[in-house]
Image (tube, rainbow, N blue to C red):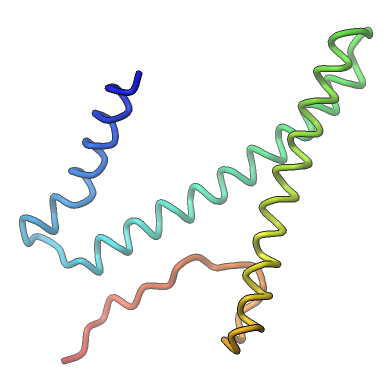
Length: 121
């Protein structure tokens, strides 16, 4: 199992950084690609947490009883915890911005890492 994870992570690393090594793209393009992938993953995780919450509620409500109700309640609670953690991270980021006097006019909902791909010399 560990070997499979190492192989997959090596393939991903080569796929992301091969253009930089071949000078086909700049490092800014590679960081921009990583930014796009991370923003997509954030949306996917939030969607998965919401789906888990509703799936747990549906399973709890429509189960006959016993073990299915308990499992539905567990799934719903995991969904609530996941949503709480993701939203609280936004609050922690806002607290750090206020503490270190980082001012921004952007809303509290993060837009992702903004990469300036235009270089000036």
